[in-house]
Amino acid sequence: MLSQDQRAEFYASGLLKVKSLLSEKAIEHARTAILQRFEPLGLSLGGKWQLENVSPTGWPDKGYKAKEIGNKVEEVERLLDEPGVKPMANALLDDAELDHEFFKRPQILVTLPNAGEWFMPNNGWHVDVPRLSTGACPGVQIFILLSEIKPGGGGTLAISGSHQLLNNEGFIRSRDVTKRLRAEPLFQAFMSEPRHTIDWFEVQAPTTEPVEVKVVELTGAPGDAYFIDLRTLHSGAPNMSHKPRMMATHRFLRADAAKEMAVIRTE
Image 1 (tube, rainbow, N blue to C red):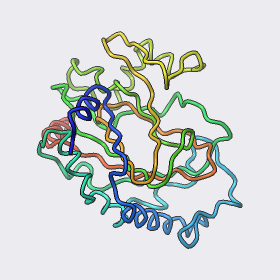
Image 2 (cartoon, rainbow, N blue to C red):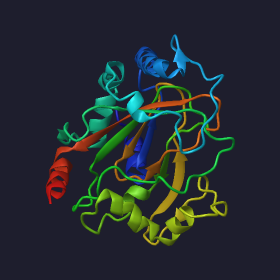
Image 3 (cartoon, rainbow, N blue to C red):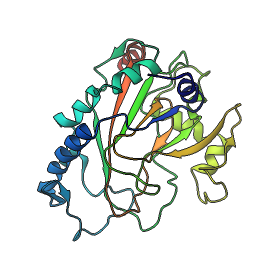
Image 4 (tube, one colour):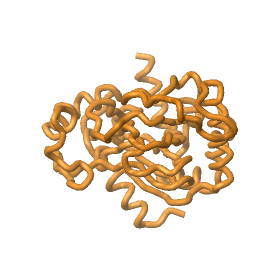
């Protein structure tokens, strides 16, 4: 399932896109179930969005509160049982033993239209897990596209190559990873105004470490999926399209990483 080229791409960039990984049927069931959650909010009806009379919110407001729809959606959880999902995650992690307690179920990601024009966010960049004492990859995160997402349509942003930074400095809590990177001259420029002097999508910008980074926008068709190294810096993005961005995400965490995180959590 995992080719040598795909493995090399993932290890070098921290990201891997797999087109049409999930079936149309599974995607449609998940999308319909999510849309039903938005009906009480007056944002959908009969499996379709109803946004004609809804005024776009401003970034970073997604247009609703996450607790209003929750994440306990059976059809979304079933996405992880699609034939290609877990085997690909396992292959990227060299069949390491996985933990199932830290991240128990997929998360729903929906962003309603919320920007008149697109811009690169300079805040909200984060990682979801700490850097381990070994510097090793703690796991992978899958982003599943439930709708077509075009450039500027609210697709998650990830910084290719950022998973290679700070791996020789011992254990670093997730909130401190971003703080440390802000001290890097490159990220100081990136996370401040103005940000238009560098084309972050096209130019591979060097860091003080022998690593080049650039921004990748997670776009594509329903059923496409991205796998990213859990050390990768990522962020939400404005949605300047006229359609909601719909994704589901889940984190596959290595069992040894979970054990180290649990020890630190109790300190």
